[in-house]
Length: 411
Image 1 (tube, rainbow, N blue to C red):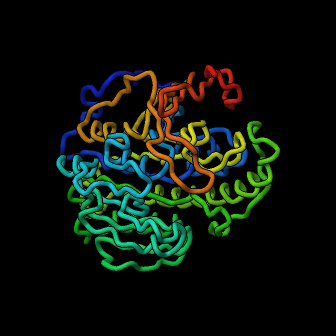
Image 2 (cartoon, rainbow, N blue to C red):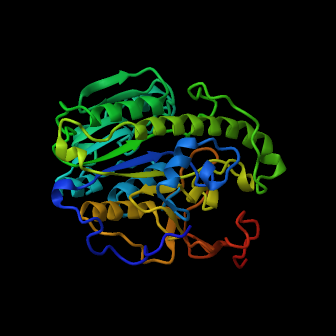
Image 3 (cartoon, helix red, strand yellow):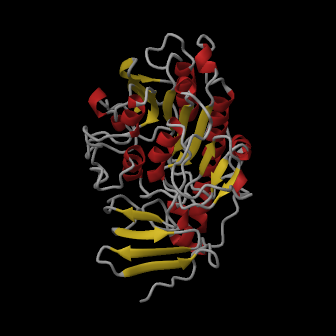
């Protein structure tokens, strides 16, 4: 189904709401969850009943992309609405500048309570500490480096998909919580949103919250809340030499997808209004589900991220906000702040562009990641990618060649 009337700009009062009943707004942001890896998107490997149900109630932005298929660059762009490196994040280890203006600042000025839960990945990290493990997981993000969120509870990074360490507004020092990370973060977020004694999210103001989950990021062999692994069906663009590694990793990947889908389902099935505040009960909650980037998983013989292929740059994006259907608009994570402000202002948001801009601002010197700086444009039908010197690198007819087999760029 095609959603009608979405092209253009934010116009008019969409809901006839007064400022007293502004909607709550929830972003659920995952990591490494590519757009193709959802049951509602037709992936036979993906068991995602909760997201499938959400998709039936939402606009599915089927052509949504990340502006930068790598975590810190994409997160900075998503929170600020400004691409990297203009937002101050050029290198993988660059922190979000303390003076950066984010969606949290904008929403607070509109009378919203603001909260962040989970993975941050924008702190001033130790370049010499191991990326996986407690060093980064227990690193404290100081209040001035939390992007302007009034309530903040999370972790810098560390890729501990089980038994995460959390710190923040009510936890001055890191505390380890037993359980699957997605379950822990979603549970803590829900409990705080419903807590009438919360200093911030007490129902007296509309709230804007980000629930940021690390799964389904590797390590793919980590336990996934008891979800069993199985043999997966590989897409046609995974060559034989990469098939064994792809099957092994994807079996874990899809287990984490199923486990995280279940955690998201529990989050969404709980009330999102505090019964002690009648005004809060009148608020609807607009829900966004997305991911900061995908993973190659053997497509074209490549793994991990930073690459400009569909497996990396296309991300899921569902928006539950009264309308239902599919939109082929070329939306980007860069658009989320503008979309959110329009909802808070009672305006309808529309996309005027016919393409999205995508890029990698720098080379991340980690195994399997993309080997060059690049930039490009993508629409629903075409993708063009250029090297840093402006020379063509890749070009694909996405309608006739969705697997991106035939490179049409001039040699």
